[in-house]
Image 1 (cartoon, one colour):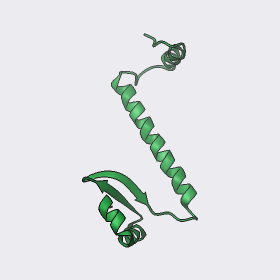
Image 2 (cartoon, rainbow, N blue to C red; image 1 turned 30 degrees about the horizontal axis):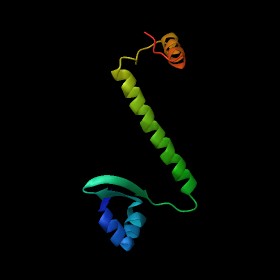
Image 3 (cartoon, one colour; image 1 turned 45 degrees about the vertical axis):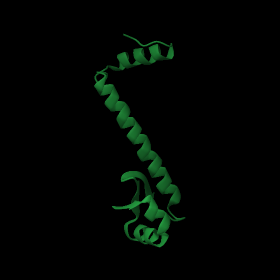
Length: 96
C-alpha cells in the first residue's frame, strides 16, 4: 500500500488519483505517522464500501472489548454469571 504525506496529498492531486486508480487505496501520513486511509470508490460501490468500513470498525471495537474482558479475567464466565453482571451494572453497581 502506498503512503503519501499530507503535503504531497494536497499538492499532487493528479498523483493521488493515479495511485488510487492503480492501487485502490493509500495511507495519508502526517509527521511520518498514519492519519487516514483513502479508498477508491464510485457510485456503483460507495454504499457497500461504507457499510463494510463501518462493519470493520465495529469488529475492531468488539475485539478490544473482548481483549479487555479476557485481561480482566472475565473470559470464562458462565451465562448465569454474565446475566448477574449485566443486572448489577444496570442496577448501578458491579457484582462480585
